[in-house]
Amino acid sequence: QGVGRLLEAGVRIVGGCCGAGPEDIAALRRLLDGFDFSSVQAERDPDAGRLVADGQSAFFLPEYPEFTDPIPCAADMTDSLLDAEDSGCDAALIQIDSLEDAQAFGENAYMLKMPAAFCSSDLQALERALLLYQGRGVLDSGGGLPREQLEGLASRYGALIY
Image (tube, rainbow, N blue to C red; front, side):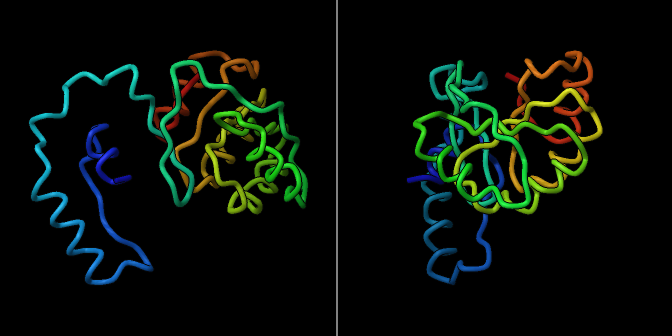
């Protein structure tokens, strides 16, 4: 079901990872053999959402996603990240103010089970956060950086800008 939605969204590369066995790969093969790739629209359906991912799951964000309140980075972000998941929001807005913040988030990111959006006025710190994040991140355009700089980062790291 999840891989089917990814294929419908235009994903062209799929596979297995550490826990995938021969039966999983066989099921994936059957899905691919039965999928009508010509049915995928050349233009993205705006109602389908924009595809983002964390390290383990894919998510479809609406055109106007709701972010959590900014979450400050710390050595232990467990409570903040769990609260974000319970918020009902579309993505956790992570406040990155320094290279140390980016590092702290990178060390805690595995706990986040929803998309991460990053807000920063520090270009280097924001780039470090994207580098350390094991997923397709979101850049919040309200962080104070010029749009051109955000577009450069988005291009290099496959991030989305909202």
